[in-house]
Amino acid sequence: MLTMKTRLRAAALALSLATTGMAAASPVPDYAFVHVTGTAFTAILPDIATLDFEIVAADADPAAARAVLETRVAEVRALMQHLTLDPEDVVVREVRQTVRKGEQSAAGGPVYELRCDVKINVRNVTSWPALTGGLFGKPNLDGFASSFDSSTMDKTVDELVTQAVLDARRRAEVIAAAGGRRLGALTGATPDAIKNLSTAMGLQRDEFRMPRRAGAQEAQQQDREQLMSIQAIKLQQPVDVIFRLENLPAGRKAR
Image (tube, rainbow, N blue to C red; front, side, top):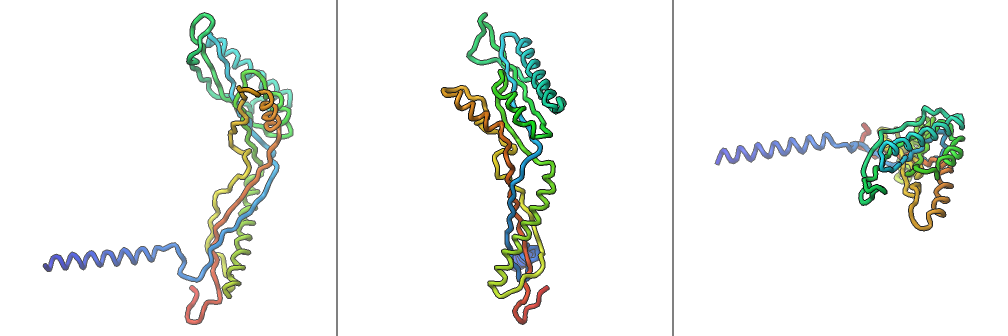
């Protein structure tokens, strides 16, 4: 019986210590505070971009299909040079070879399909319409996708964080005034990941894939116009901020 009581006391003590520890580690401040979220928005014009697409060739002879891929890559580099873009900004990934299922060559043998991914880094978007216009619709090119960025993105993000904190302070001042308090110092802030509100950055879209269906000519014309346009980058920066509240009630001291 004594052993049982000892165990119960030990368990109660452990529970008490655990509860005390949890209270001490609580992330909630033990002073009067207000927690608000500030947000900043902007839209900027990009000055750099990337263009992704695939080169696809099929033939009964894998060597002939590979020759088509190499010819298309050479044409892409020639276009880059014609537009005074650096041909070295064309990145060609490894060639993948498969056999087309359910398809045979005229001789009755298999049909081999070869694919490679191509990425073009465009360091001057003024050449974008001419580049995309020169590539879109060419044979063996498929799966187009665009991505836009800014060379001053870090500076833009820093400015958005500052604006978001100022927005949070404005909101907090309204809340403090409504409660008869005065807004004190900023005691904590956490910026969330910046959100790209546009659909142009880093998103491969179905409408950029070369259509192979009824009415393809009309759809391809719409896709061509969309691909050739330079998309603005719309950004949103949220920040969670905690401010201290002053003018505390009598009998309670701020720490």
